[in-house]
Amino acid sequence: MIPTGLFDRVIVISLPKSVDRRQHIQRHFQDIGLADYTFFDALDSEAPEVAQLFGEGKVAQYPPCFRCGKLECGKPDCNNVLIPQQVAVFATYLALWRNIAATDDRVLVCEDDVMFHPWAARVLGDLSQCIETGDLTFSGTEPALLRLGWALGPDHDEALPFRFDRNPRMSNPCHAITGAYARALLEEFDRINHTVDVYQHKLASASKTYGVTIFPPIASELSWSVGSFESLIHPKELHAQYLEMEGRHADARLYRQRLASHFTDVAHRNPE
Image (cartoon, rainbow, N blue to C red; front, side, top):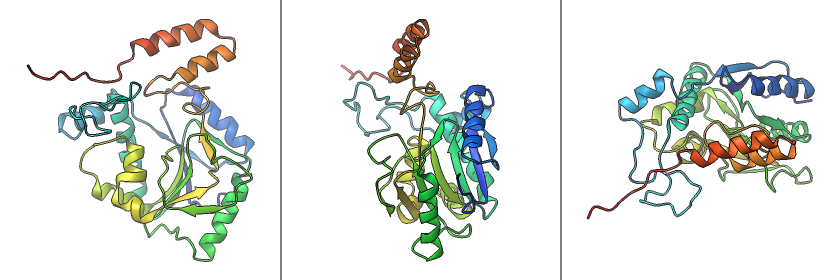
C-alpha cells in the first residue's frame, strides 16, 4: 500500500489518446492501493500551445546543439534539436505548474508509464518521519522538490538504506512539488532551452536550492527502462526487443522501420 498522507493531490500526466497507458495506471494503482488520483491531460505536438511557443521564438534552435552547446554532440543516438514532441511535453508541464502554482498544495506527480516498487511504502514512511522531525521541509507554502523515481538502475535496490542528497536525477516519472516550487519554476521560465526534465530537476535555480533526491527511488518507468511501452518522443530499440520477447515479431519489424526513419538531429555543414 502506498501511503498518500504526504500529498494533497496525486496527478498523472497522460495524453487523452494513450488508452493503454491509462489502463496501466488504473490497474497498477489499484494493485498498490492508490485510489485518489487524477489524470492531467498532456498536450500533443499539434497543440496550439506548441505552435505558439515556436512562433514566439521561445524554443532554442539549432545550431548549436541544445544539449552540449556545440555543433556536434559526438553521440550518434542523441538528438541535437528540440522537436515538437519535446516542446509539447514542456508545454504540458508549464500548464501543470500553473495549475499547482495557484494553490499551496503538495502534489505527487507521475507520468503514465510509472511503476512503483515494493519498497515504496517503507521509503515514504521514512520520508514522512524526516519531514516531521524537520530534517526535510515539505510544505506547500515553501518551495520543495522531492525526486522520487527515475530510469531503472543500480539505485533501485530494496536493500539500500533510506537517505537523501541534492544531486539531481531526471525524476519526471515520479516526483513531488509544492505550489511554491511551481511558482518558482514559472517565475524563472523564459524560453525552452532544454528538455523539461533537465530544466525542472537540474537547470532551474530553484532545483539547486530546494531539490532533494530520495534513495532508494520508489519508482521507475516502463518506456525507457523496460520497453513495454513505446516512447512517445523518440522511438527506442528497447521497445522492439520487448515486442520480440513477447513473440510479436511482425510488430517488432514494423517498429524498427519507424526507428530507422525517425528524425533525430539536424546536420550542420560549414560554409565554404
